[in-house]
Image (tube, rainbow, N blue to C red; front, side, top):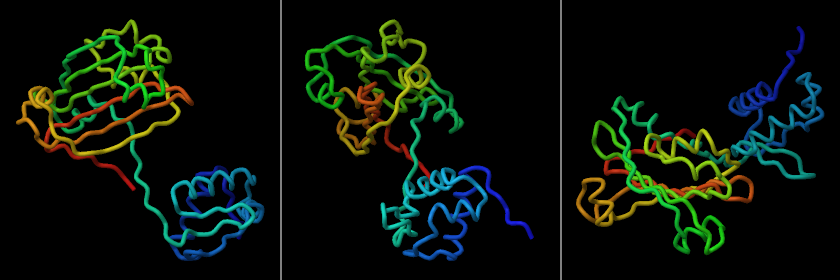
Length: 233
């Protein structure tokens, strides 16, 4: 019987994952080295390296230089989060999406914003505040600062017909981001916008996205009570 060959790193990854799940390689076990696996799988060593690196990034394997690769003794389940286009999110729930621009202005931001985005304290950023609707009911407030030194074309975009959330996904590439989740009390202004009592508990997402070392945008999304965030592990 011929030994099957693996033509891409994804197929190698799934075979390694299968062996771990079947306990052919138990938690804590040292697995064969890349060169031996490449021979066994009939593929390049670089293909094996990419597969093992992916599994290490997801917490399945523990890789240490000169010590080899082991099956993680206590695998860490990691959630995968995507930056959602809010319009798509609303429509996937079967609701009709609506959008209202509240404010658009270039101004010097508070120190907390320039500090988080690592921009000069006196540098102006584009501030966009908007309300997203689901079936004409408030869904989320988008309070966003855009670094127009990085996203030059944002200066000429009015954001009256399309949200900054959706526009940036199409026009502003990013390499990585920082994200935080919290429960906050609605200010008088936010409560009025969302149509809830002041100090109501709101779900907040704070995110900064980066293009290498330069910040692209910082946003706070405030969701009306009842919002649920779902992801996969």
